[in-house]
Image (cartoon, rainbow, N blue to C red):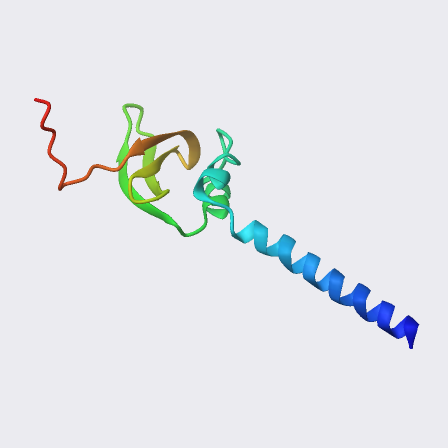
Length: 108
């Protein structure tokens, strides 16, 4: 009986620890996910890291005819990351404040 009890405790403990580690992978904040990005990654690699939480912003050609795609990833109501892909590869990313249409700059 004692062996069965110990076995049950070990089994439940393993189940709890494995669930928490899997859950932490999916609960990463946008900042944590963006830190995993590396220049030169493909769009597929970038979207696997960012998930479906991005918004396409623009698609255009550069001077040499390359395809330039810009994506936005919201962090919260005030900040977002701008992801720039050239020919399907990560060229750069920046963090910027989201423009607020209700905010008036009274310092002018």
